[in-house]
Length: 255
Image (cartoon, rainbow, N blue to C red; front, top):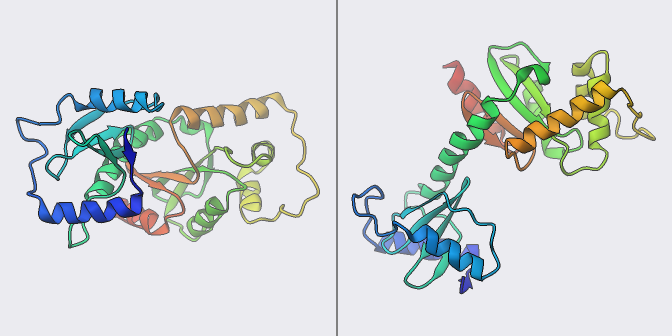
């Protein structure tokens, strides 16, 4: 790749380009971006980026700019100029076409993977009519924020999977939760910070508990979850402590 522009500058470029360029039918019979995925991957490899796996290349809404799908991520590629664009395409009304596509891809791929998680491996919190699959970490501040928000709702049943990916002691705390006589109560204790000032995390040596904690983490990594918290509500994936997104997904299910 010959040039990588800053995302801030490119958002402005895309905004102006979309306003000035004719909007194309991305599903037209003759797609000028057919086969461009191979060129993109080859150029990326030349630049030392050999891990790009292009799932789809197609014409974007801007003439001359190809939409490149890599997993659940979207990049744009101008093959004539050999330029890569990282940013969002949106219109003057504020509609963000890139974000819509990323959300669609996330729900299709990550949503499918999360929907296939074995719920008997999770711990259950609540008994409401709406099921929420919750991927969390007891040391993650954003996970705690989302957990506190969900604690205030009586309309959800939470199936909790632990994925301590970023905090060194979190896996040991997960084992303590799983080993507890009341895992739900212990989960709340950790998520509310009640153990934050403890001198040490109790050592859990029970082989079944250790294997359970390891299995949970492997399940989430195999599902390609990249961060916590992550939620699945009725086929909708919500990433981060996005309480507005959670509220919308929960109430959509109830309606």
